[in-house]
Image 1: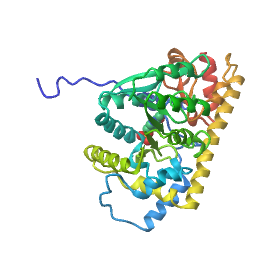
Image 2 (image 1 turned 90 degrees about the vertical axis):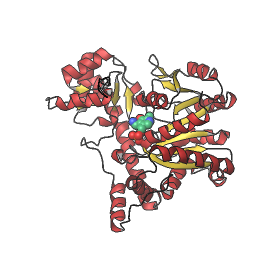
Image 3 (image 1 turned 30 degrees about the vertical axis):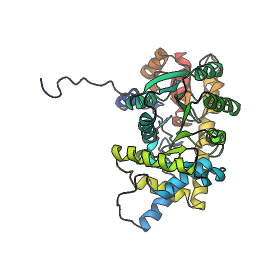
Image 4 (image 1 turned 120 degrees about the horizontal axis):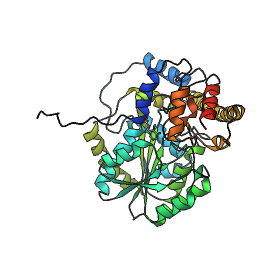
Length: 398
Ligand code: PMP
């Protein structure tokens, strides 16, 4: 017996595993729709113009890299607050909220989960069925029992709101409800404004703890529009959490820029919560890194750069929408014997195509078009050059 002899090989991450198989595929027309990354029409991860200008500004005024405060860069956290609560000056002025720079949206969820475990050790965590696959692992890793609330309805390709409401209403008080604030990953099916209002009411009446995952702000309708859920929960007077990510909206995946925000009842409460969350961060990674958050803070706090970024975000959003339209057209042209109009209604980077595991396997093996086994495709990986291959592949495996 040696120290590691009992260690078993962990299963491969399904999406990253797909990437390895894709790389080994010699078909020159191969297409990877598996990973959740935005690519340009040229098939590249964009380096945004606003980011390039900000980096130039940073280089022209180089700074030493001492440790940051535990909560990160203040100008960054203020920028996050602006994005979340721009129209809620009363609320932020009242000190009901605080933000922490974290290592991506994942880091925000992890810090929030660890804090909640100390606050509500016996709470259940409910995530949507289906959800981003890391939600379950993250909250289980923090020590919680994780359950799924009904969400996606494959027959309507929308949200099964009746069942979702019934399930949430039956959750015990103090349950933690993880909600995709917009651009649901993996289905692309979002709640309507009226449905959000109902969810807020349920959380109030049943004393549930909302945890909004906002990984795609700006990818559905716009920065302000996509913050609707945050505003509704804020106005309701509830205390809740928000995990923001700038991985996609700034195309800064590798810089790990995200934020955890809390909304409390008062300035006094915020101060206490902040002091406890700082303890969680301190024992996780001590304090966050400088570079990515400096870029984002520079952009968010400079009017011209902020406008430039919003323009680029709009270009990404519009390109995704154009690809949704074109995919539906190309599927028809390829003779697909199914109605795919729903792809236009779904929002964000992903589409649940309704393809079965067997159909996805055939799509990969016979057409070198790589998708996740659940039938999820990343619409943001489509471009005018690869879309025919994709549409013909899908039509052929139906
Ligand atoms: N939540 C959801 C729903 C996501 O899709 C992602 C990214 N795939 C994240 C959180 C994590 O974001 P980040 O890469 O910034 O950690």
